Image 1 (cartoon, each protein chain N blue to C red):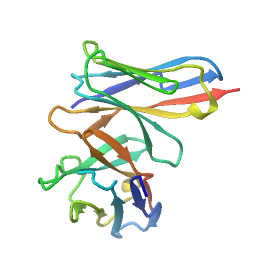
Image 2 (image 1 turned 60 degrees about the vertical axis):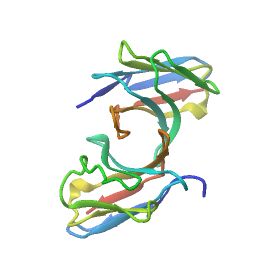
Image 3 (image 1 turned 30 degrees about the vertical axis):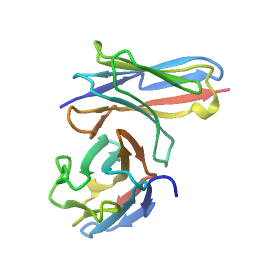
Length: 111
Length: 111
């Protein structure tokens, strides 16, 4: 079965600084999703990447997919308190859309 | 509403009782998913409905778990004879053309 490893597991960043979260798959990636979760809430869809080399941006968050490395990275520029939460990557399996998720990265933003 | 909704938001039950969790997907979304999020296991796929096709039940942990989707819309996840290890947050998602959108979840506590 596919496994996703996220790094780091936890990240504490000063407000205004940039940061990167990585997601590495044990198998070929056919689709990679990024979600954000705050305690007690559901998952907020951020981005979906489907093609090798694809890069998407939304506000100050950019995600890239490196198909050859079976890896995706999520980059936040000029972090804000609203960025705090748990970031989860999810990978789709070939032929279906059920997702396997990484263990998450807990992001804390300090003033 | 515009998003996926789930009810109840919290459910506390006694071991051995049956529970039903409800999911209302986004209107027009053909695919519906159930996931479970627990401390020890992270976010796990349970079951997937796509249109009129037979559901993919490969993630259901035991035969105590079942789900149905009526009229291609609302879904109910039923857990019979609940056990303490069933305690978790149960998340529902719906999708159209790939992007999965999650509901706020139902937090189930089995005493």
